[in-house]
Length: 138
Image 1: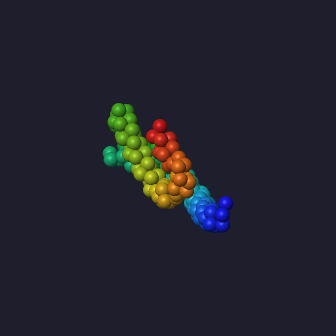
Image 2: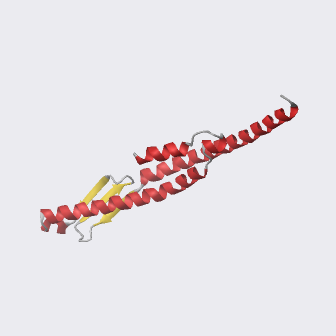
Image 3: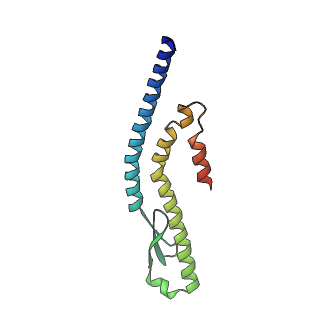
């Protein structure tokens, strides 16, 4: 191997190390963000009152029911009316929880999309994003 080839390999190696260092720094930053995001998701609660004023439903960030409160008026209505009101209100609370969760996760998803892929670093390497996109669809 002549001197020019050695310098070329050295230069390529240096460039690769810089890219890997950049990725590691970005991953460390992402990890710190993920801790904050997880805390926000754990604390998130959505409370929705029914349009008819009979029920109030609270869900967590995953849309899991955490509390249901009935007003005095709920006891004067029919069981069918109360059931329908509770169901509609629970669905609306879960929808809002999904929306809030997407908003909380958006900065993490954007930062992840900005990171280079394995195929960007190593010519001919498979894309890790393709595998993640496929896994997310199942």
